[in-house]
Amino acid sequence: MAALPRRIIKETQRLMQEPVPGISAVPSESNARYFHVIVTGPEDSPFEGGLFKLELFLPEDYPMSAPKVRFITKIYHPNIDRLGRICLDILKDKWSPALQIRTVLLSIQALLSAPNPDDPLANDVAELWKVNESEAIRNAKDWTRRYAMDN
Amino acid sequence: MDSIQEGDCAVCMLKYNHPAKLPCDHIFCFLCIKGVFLRSHKCPMCRSPIPEDYLDNPQLLKEILDEKTETDEYVDNKFWWYYEGQDGWWSYDERSNEDIESDFNDGKSECKLLVAGAVYCVDFTQMIQYRQSDPRRKRKVKRDTHTHPSKGIAGILKVCPKQVDLNTVNITANILDDHTDTIENNHENGDDIDNMSQILRSMSIQEPQLPSGSPNTEDT
Image (cartoon, rainbow over all chains, first blue to last red; front, side, top):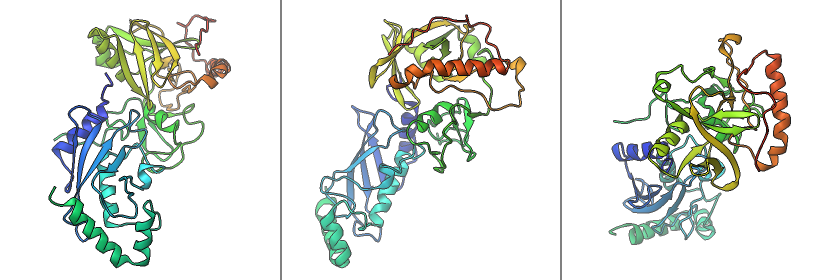
């Protein structure tokens, strides 16, 4: 019966009925714990205009453990590595079962607006972000155009 | 519009099931707190620490009364599901019971439950429950009338309403002798139960239905 816990059903319904602006999360037809996610790049960020694909998976013991989230679209960001892994405290030690899919995705969107090069996952990107922010931002815009638009 | 209402537990997002209040005043289902406690010891809402002995002394907002007949939903429900504890049977919580009964009636061979953050499997052919991540942790289960004697619900020892001040909200729960037992803990269970029985006796709360000295066939 607990094939799909009621909480997951409830969260999914709510994501469909009251979607978060700029974020879409649709469960896979074959696996209701696997979501195809699209996050739009926030305004006034180097990612503006981009559509970023992510994958989100709810582990068996969700919500006791955090969803697993990864960028599929390449992105130039100090807290996201080349495999799309995200350095975000609420996905790790700061996870709380009162957080939800929507709050996680909002936090990821906020991370795009506020890169944190002091807590890097992609070291080369973080380094450039610190020593030459304007060039880093140029790279981020370039990658956004190249990988996150028109596809 | 199916938005999440204020009256729902923030962990399971359902109507509170045995609501319990943490010292920070945040309220969750008892089993949800238990699942959280076994991992982080922090309130899911504000991250305030949960006291070490909280599961032994939860602040429940409603008592577990002697029989599961107080609300209408039980009246139609002829059968209830139980799992074996050290010296008696525990009733499954209402939600799990509903899931098990439904799968049983559908003729399925097993029912999977998410209880306190872990997945359990109730196997109807062998009438056992085991933890999916560690099938060695198993217990007998049975389906019986809803008035069958039990120690309490899902690890919360019940109190006899006649002998307890109904304003009291502190109800003794037992964290070791329930779903969340561990192999390492099993040898301690006996002692713990003895202590608990002593406490219960000293509080002159009785469970007259329980045969004394019933065999403890705790599994590993």
